[in-house]
Image 1 (cartoon, rainbow, N blue to C red):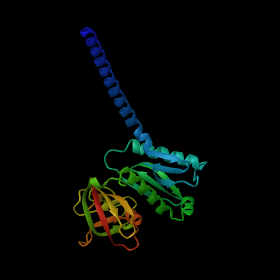
Image 2: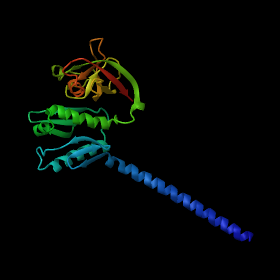
Image 3: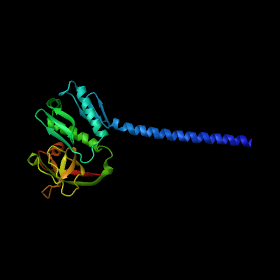
Image 4: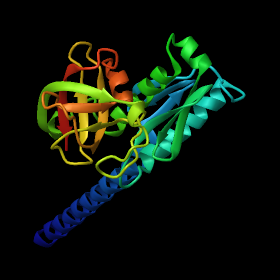
Length: 250
């Protein structure tokens, strides 16, 4: 009997070890598979509607220069999937480029999408306003600034924001970039160059992401100078100066 019990104990022990090893291999394999599939799950589309992280960022309702709405949406979907799966290194610059019949939206030198006059008409908007709206929603997702970002806020500032635009176009900024009024950028006197800021307008609830690439404002009673693109997105470009909340993102 003692020998038999010893054999059963050994068998049970061996089976337990095998089970544990199998479980470890399964967990590791599942984790690796999940990690591989996450990038492909970030950007999705349903017909002409593009989603990022489950939120709608744009809806294409006209074919534009493509043969169909589906073809155009598929092109945008692939470009955004590539952006989120293979984000650029170094400086990241989101901006739009207005043309006579369309407004193109870029991340660095990569075209993301275009807005046509037909899009603006269908959305009861202007081409540039619609392009800025869609692009800002994309960069909000890019920097993950919709849900649970509060723990990444390292500083919060309330102050007056002004803006500067086409009159300064082409001039050199403090970080030796060429100023583009249609890029999501800002000037601040002390925050480090390259800082990512989430700027909010408490009057209408609108938010915009900007990157600090210049020094200013000159007026000491103003906290930040926004680009025209950022000011239009916040809805303060017509009043010129307004109070905003600035969150510095880590």
